[in-house]
Length: 402
Image (cartoon, rainbow, N blue to C red; front, top):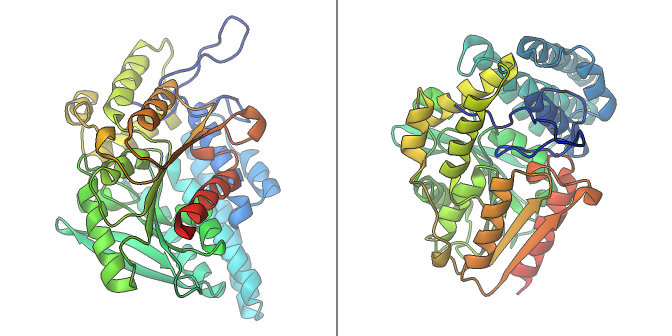
């Protein structure tokens, strides 16, 4: 099983050599690339109400590079402290400050479970704490958040809907990737889009968040659960066909390319990045892991087991058997489409994103390439989330103004 990020091998000049599943071009703090990625994720959630820079660095000081357990406990302990602070402020009537601290508690618990054993007792405990802290923060901050579920194959796909005060606001459905939960999408992009005038729905598709605990796993035909969620948004929240946008991040870049090829109720799709053939990346990642000359860290091992759990497989062979045939067809896409790519992303992601942009039949399409100077060159702009919000909101504004 592949990890989403494997250690980079030094090139001739000491610079990292690109790997098929690379997600950052630079080392920011940790030598372990999995940890470094989610360290940057924790930092980039700050502008939307996640942990502040000094808080993340304080937590990082208590983490041993590559040691998954030290990561889990450092972030979990900080979440507990933020929960206590939020409760103290709530008792004093400081409602907004309490909500702000509670949202930071959520961000802490969310980061903590990233390297817990997937589906295990500690994972489930931290996931429940993240859910409770997030829901409480929404209430304390007086944000118009409504939690909902979409029935799917004997289980439920959880979601949260942020209704904008504008009566005619378009609805944007945000789909995350292999490592996301619907609540962290609020920090990555959801809050920014809502503040810019959109109603925003954030949802866990099969295999995302904690849905694997229900026996739901990543769907090759991802357009089907997306269609079910759209049904819910239309019937429950009054979303208007033709006034709905779809945004996909990471593996969500595959899910939304599938929907773009068939879903007639969408006005536009945005992907960072378009990922129409994920099996090709999975295959190259497996090969790279097998060829590695050093054992993976505990963090990398847990990342791989988490991917297997979410995919519903127990081996690399099982993953490839299911996902190598998975593809989205660019020639079927005619709706407006925005493709976003960071220069530090995987060469596989980059090649697929460029090819997708060239081959889709849309007469209205754009390709945004973010280089190192932008500060947003990481996978899904993990090192500068605000830039992702700005690019996405700008494109949506042009589409819905037409």
